[in-house]
Image 1 (cartoon, one colour):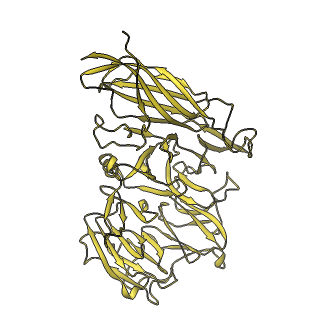
Image 2: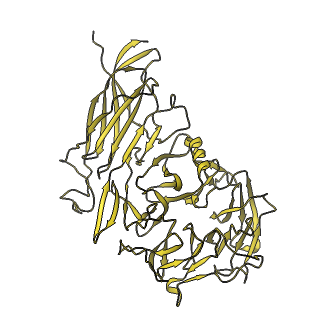
Image 3: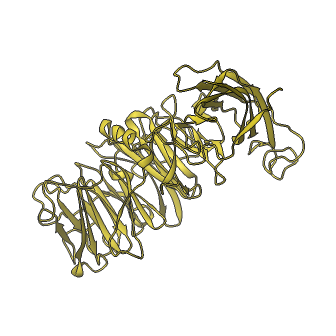
Length: 529
């Protein structure tokens, strides 16, 4: 008697994102062992990431820092590369970084573009290791809009050159001064340029930590958090400097990258030498317990940190994702805070880019949403489903480049340990991806050699219910948004027999979104072996 087909459903395939830490032979198939160039929707569906579309012609020099500054009611984007800070002119994509003019270009000798920008009291304050802090007065000033700060703290004998700062609690706080790396200075009240008058002052941390230095500063729940490389010191009452008092010292854990710090809801995220961590306040405890957010990729991430600590980050509020870019290595991790995995951390994916499009700086702005400064010197928005380059030959010339998303499952057990099954078919339900090609291959029983790749052309139906944006009959027409059509089922044969199978799926973008909705394996009972 012929044996019946068995259906092995994978309804939550990859819903928990990347896991390179646990044993792939025993890992739950809700995790992925490779999750590149994808995002995970609120529903947990695996989808293509959006593309980076260039808004200005590349300068050829990586954009080191970005910020949005409100100049008396007008939002402006400031970007730095080389030794200059620019007010970016997006209306002139071929000349977005002006070659002269103090109003729009400010050059500071000895800088590399690695500024920390601080919006404070209607001005933009700029901090860079090894140079005097700079200030942009904009519409508040007269004459030159840019000035260097005028007064040094009394204890500084050479150069006041803080590498990190924050504007909060009514003043600017700064640290990382070459002459005094274990000291934090605060400015006069409401005057981020006066470090000697009024109630300005300093915190000497040398008595609290040994041979450490200030890396970054951040506000958190009415407290001042001072990050060293190997320690964290938390102060109470920073709004009343006369009452400053230590709340807690966390020893053995610090911050390796100033620009990895982001405030996310009621949390503060930062990169330590052992992974991405957070300070999470609870109602049960009076202290600030540390949480490791990267346990699912811990060893891999530690190796990345060992290779480079040149890290930039951003929190994209409307998507609930924290993006961390290892700038020197084109390694980008995306931590999705919309969904917490069973072990209590955000789900993780990775992004990669070609042709020097990878982020060298990032900012979340009111004007453009996520804005990415790229290695090739352009500024790009996060939109569409291709990476788009902009050139200039007398007119704007755009070229779209496809990118490939890749996901791989852990080893999926197909039945009893003594019985293999005959692989018959895989049924995939996908949404969108019109015109794209999906590549499917599979591995059997822990083998290193995959099957031949099966290519499937994605041709979702173009009739029936379509997306709101993109259809010729939709409210916004066809020019602004691309169509995403309905669900489509794809069936393809599988070959061979196995006790365990590993799936590898890739999709080359074609300007359309695509997402995996459901996977089902069809098998037949095989021989005992």
